[in-house]
Image (tube, rainbow, N blue to C red; front, side):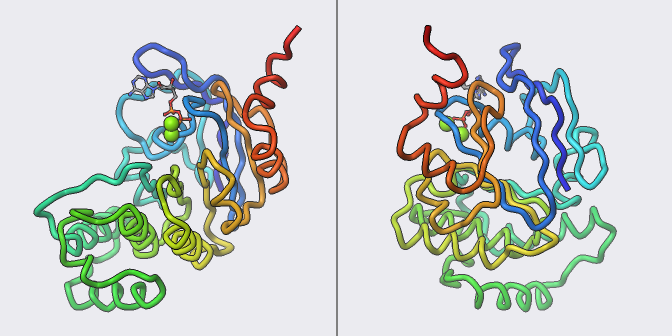
Length: 252
Ligand code: ADP
Ligand code: MG
Ligand code: MG
């Protein structure tokens, strides 16, 4: 589904990703772990097509298509979804309106008809019953006054509505209490399907107790330095990232 080959990315002339390669098959959940500043968010942002990132080398293919040639909206239409580390608040913009606009933009780009408000509400009700989200949150401003946990649940709700092929969660666990963490993980687990792949970016192992990844990658200094099964996350938890750093540049 996703093939990243020898990806080099710079921000303002400084190289952040330095030859990253990664392959993700449909139905799989891959976790990306790594120390702060390793380039994890950079990877997520480049996949989503955010501005300010210069790809200097390498390729990214989604289902055989050149992802780098697509605009952010086209990527969303192609099924790429990025949930942000710090969800933005958009006071005054009704959350339901926001979600409907996002869904209809995606449908339009796919050449599908827009949903009217009745059809949209029907879709919302289906998804609401699946997730533990209070419908009151749909009538407030986007993330306005939401708690950390509510913001994350709202993101998972967006994910459920948009039904992406590739869902990227960037530190969706940061700052969550255990109940919110479980709600996010439940949402992700419900959304797992043979047609959908997840890239779960996380600094801590905790989330991976609830979302069982097929593969764990360690990203350090702009590259994948280690890949393995779920046990790799536990090893990292036990030994810390210094352990990985020693393996990249062994001390003399
Ligand atoms: P991670 O998510 O793994 O903590 P990031 O991808 O956010 O790492 O950042 C990787 C490196 O890129 C860091 O050194 C960070 O300071 C730098 N960086 C990230 N975003 C920007 C930016 N907008 N401008 C300049 N440097 C940036
Ligand atoms: Mg960071
Ligand atoms: Mg980050």
